[in-house]
Amino acid sequence: MDKYLGIYLKDQLALGVLWRELARRAQRANRGTPLGGALARVSLGIGEDVDEFASIMRRLGVRPDPVRTALATAAERLGRFKPNGRLRGYSPLSRFVELEFLVMGIEGKKQLWTTLRDLAGLGTRLADVDFDRLVERAEQQRAELEPFRERAGAEALGA
Image (cartoon, rainbow, N blue to C red; front, side, top):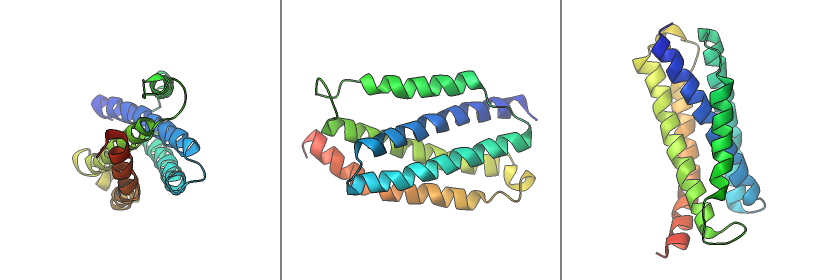
């Protein structure tokens, strides 16, 4: 196992945990709305992706770094304190920023799956992992959130 691949995998797992936690928080903040339903589906998919990624790491003999994972979780929680135009509570800017970051994370995950498949050679080494399906799932997650992201951006930014 190349040491750089191991480092890369540990970093990507931490990022996956951060996106999963952000998706769960956004889903809770929008519960009972169409956006909340979309976020529930996307959140579930992101959780499944993190589990699948952790499984890939195990198969490659790469152990997760609990410090990186804990720092990612702490970073997500600290992000809750970002100014959002209101002294307390959720604002239209909160919704937009969360969706914007989630879309960025989903795009990064799509790139991750293609990187592992093509550049790290895992498409051959782990032939039973359906990287194409994982890329497609990321595209579906992005497509599900995009109309809500656009609407939230227009609302928060005044267009």
